[in-house]
Amino acid sequence: MSKGQLTKDQILLTALEFSSKFGFEALSIGKLAEAVGLSKSGLFGHFKSKEKLQEMILDYTADSFTFKVFLPATKMPRGIPRIDAILENWVKWTKNLMKGGCPLLTAAIEFDDRPGEIRNKVRDLYRQKMDFFKKAAVIAVTEGQFKRDSDPEQFAYEFYSLMAGYHINSRLLDDKKAEQKLKTAYQKLINDYKV
Image: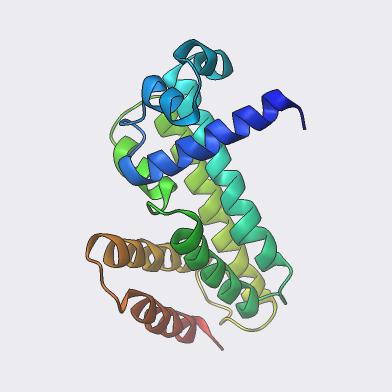
């Protein structure tokens, strides 16, 4: 990997950490340049605009989520064990890797009512994520682990809703039992769909 790419990766990691704590709109070229030890013009040369920086942070976040949550889960047996792994990996990702919480949730809240390229990007990333959850449910049906009449779209919605609730309870409400509550709710969800 070239020195330029290493620098860019370090900038994106720092920007991701900042965005997960303070939001995407709070991120400025000046603050980020100071945090990584570059001049504003040096940092600007990598991204050209704040919007491009935000897009690249979102891509970097999606890649991190894919490599830390989805890919390890695909190594598990098909069906419920894979869904279990997605949940477990996601909790680890938000708890251990994203000190400020889930940057994709932050972006969804910040940009949900603001038309533009960033909102479109966030929406596309969420659709990809929801499609993965739906596919996991379809596989569980195919494997005979979920009921044949299961609605994969409804499952994806409920599964995601559990994680959003976990995020708010563990981060905002500082609920020490949030993870246990998540696991209890998740088990109820699985039992609702299970054969």
